Image (cartoon, rainbow, N blue to C red; front, side, top):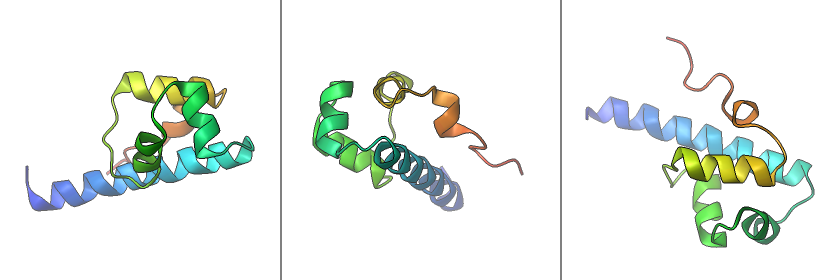
Length: 82
């Protein structure tokens, strides 16, 4: 993978993490509560919110379900159109 592609990919993970964090806070949930609701380890949730984890679709679905939203609400506009 080209270095520029890696930077772009990381940026998209950062954006997704920011959206998940915002949705969690809007729902009044802590990372611990989201972890419990989604049955995902809290440290993994933290990594996702920091853009450090390239999560699978299954994990994204678990997070969306715990946040009571659909995947599209978290991913709209990602990746940005060129």
